[in-house]
Length: 115
Image (tube, rainbow, N blue to C red; front, side, top):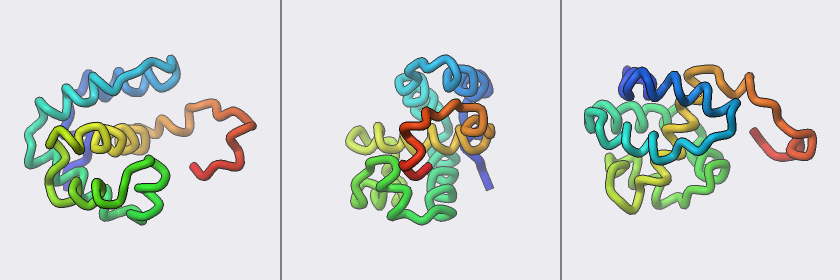
């Protein structure tokens, strides 16, 4: 069973952890890493992650349309129209796999939002 952190380059994973606390934008770097990763392994890791989640809640939390989530589950993560949504999923996977969410300082005003 592949994890996103196993599929992407080690430097991206390390930089991702640092960037969460530095509040930098890494979407372009994540997309580049996704495009350079072995497609089969990346798709498998994404599909496994989605399968382990409640897909409706995941789509809502990441602001992904249900049909786009279904397309990503069907191996279309690297198609242009799904790339940004797939990058959101990859970022969430990295955050969970590296335990980075525990290190974030969440503003009290966001306490009512599901996380």
